[in-house]
Length: 464
Image (cartoon, rainbow, N blue to C red):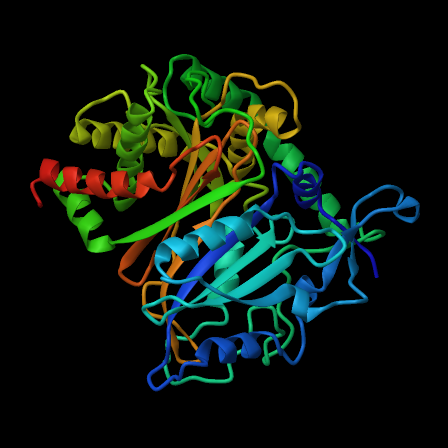
């Protein structure tokens, strides 16, 4: 049965091109269980490629025709081939992390074909330290980065002795799992949907005031959901289809110590690390603008409860355009600039209802759509995307193999060639940096710059 693809998911499919694949990815490193032999990589591959039953989310592919009225719909893949989706690879010698990241970069560059369900998984062995890697990629029309992480967590266990655990794409033994994106039948328009639309329309009456406030802040070059003062940088150009991925992790304790000594948050320290690394990278390329770079930062916050649309409470997700302070030479000054910008931006969104947050965040993102569609580049609404997604706080295992690290791969787009995504796991903060290989040369240098910046922040905070 065909089901309608929601507008957000359809948009990710429509804007996709060879130079702009729209899938998110993840690279996980696993330590072999005690007593595992040399064939463990093959055993892990076989366990992942032989699920009892595939979850419906991973069996559907996009389709449109005259019969669907030209609309994109999901249809089940009648010729599903597990060998296409789950693959086994080995690294060339010497099997360093460098070879692993090179392979992940190449896999992430390849677009997913619409003729099959939009996901792949690659079990990768050959690391000289004996670890086994798992690279997965899933189209953004199916899941976003947070959903992909939750999907992985759903099949991991804190118990190192648990076995017979299902693959992420298998139906859980406890019953069918809810889809990460809700499907709607082509004829399914419920009374509840109509009521929700009326409720949102009522709440939207406050949008003009939120718009005026957002525009005023932006015109005064203050932090808000809209930026009008981002400089043009080497990152804000057309991109190619080639990708470069770099990843590394640092102990959260180091970031927490800097935050405690400086009166800032761990997320502020993450942002300051990125600020210093970007500044150094641009200086190396003689491309640092006089004014500060602006980062688009997705945030979740407890928004003010609405009388209508938010009766159930919960979190509202918005975007803040954060001034990174890359024009400042001192790392302590950059940290303070980031802290102030994040604080003001969160306060601005906290004054809005969820509907207003979504609307203002969409307004701030809107200019980035033009280059995505291949239209002429307008002044960039921001220079780089930086996300920080909370992850598991304790060690997790898959059939006895301990998850050692998890590193997100994101989506560069035309006009926005660099994406930095972080996630916390156990006692570490894991950075994944994804960029266009041609537009952002020697991207892996940013890992050294991040390390140097954290050390500089420790000195500035007096915790070195």
